[in-house]
Structure formats: C-alpha cells, structure tokens
Image (cartoon, rainbow, N blue to C red; front, side):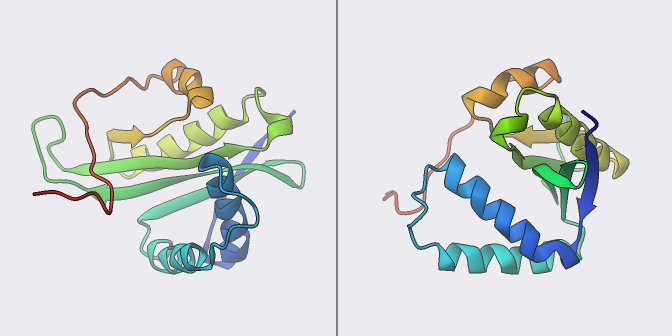
Length: 159
C-alpha cells in the first residue's frame, strides 16, 4: 500500500476539526454523546491562529483518495540551554492511524514527515507523549523515555 502525506492548511479546517475530535474521543475515552462544543470551539480558534503563523504543522496520510491518518507538530521556543542553544522545540501530537490501517507503516510515515518538517526549520529537540500502543514505534524511531518530568493539572490545589 502506498501512503501519501499531505500538509493541511487553513482551508482544511473543517477536516482538521473532524479528525481532531476523533482523536480526542479515542485517546481520552470520551463517550461519543458527551458534549464537546467548548473544546471544539477552542480547537478551531487554535487552528485559525497557529496554522497561518506556522507554529502548527498538520498533515493527513492518504491511501489513494482516502484519509487513513493524521498528525501534528507544534513548533515553539523554550529558554535556550546547553542541550538546546537556540531554544527551538517541537512537540509531536495527534499521531493517529485508522484502526484498519494500523501496523502497516502509516504512523511511521506520518512521524517521519513531521520530524522532517521540524528539522527543516532547524529544530533538533522534539518531544511527544505516547500511548502504550505507540511506544514501540517511537522507540524504533529513536525516541527515548524522559525521566524527571512532572505536571500539575488544572484544578489541583497547591500551597
């Protein structure tokens, strides 16, 4: 099967929204009948700002004319440090392949394409979060586990 990757633009916003909501439902195990209008609105606003500013590069994977997957790389700057002197960073997310095409190299092709986009912009430091089913792919591609990271979630009290 030949897989083709196409960059998505602002003219694809409705398609991007459809796929984003599909990914969110699956990744976060959100029931299909749960209202998500506010989250959908915020995601649409994000796309409308980030896509033209090139802080967000999205793509679709195709088999023929059928979309079989998607992915995103968010580009940003962190404070420069010895391991990242210019501060350029990328965060891979929304890497998704439809169930019937999983295990056929589609995810690898999406990730490779997105890494290439980040590298073309001079970014060397690339992060991602993974599910268990994606972990082996990312490890095979050279990603390693990061120790020492923590987070505090919204609504968590602190003193």
